[in-house]
Length: 174
Image (cartoon, rainbow, N blue to C red; front, side, top):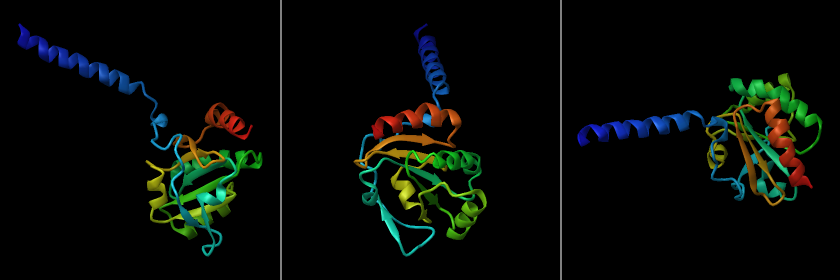
């Protein structure tokens, strides 16, 4: 009798784990960066490759890092929301053009509008890897001290901006 109970118990445990896993939100993958200093980087500007920006240049202000690419279909979906959000001037938005050709990224921004305070180039994806990027788009909120406070995976939505980003930005800018 016991030899039949063990497989049944294992099966029930697997069903419970599957049920819990199916109820998780894939956009809320915990990031090991939350409440830790933003990874160090130095990236060239897409508009002027001779100029560079590092995370140290952004200390003292709350800012967003939006990781995107011209080849990314969900980035195109998110882009009009970023353009609209940027018009409100709540925080500077820095775009990290991930594993993309500079010319393709610049053409994309020219065609669709540029919501970024500066668009930065990450052609080999090293900066994105340091930030733990799973895939584009992803958006990070970084506070005045350079601490990552939030990570959103996937294209931003009006609900995410209204319910997550804006309240957090108000708190961080208070």
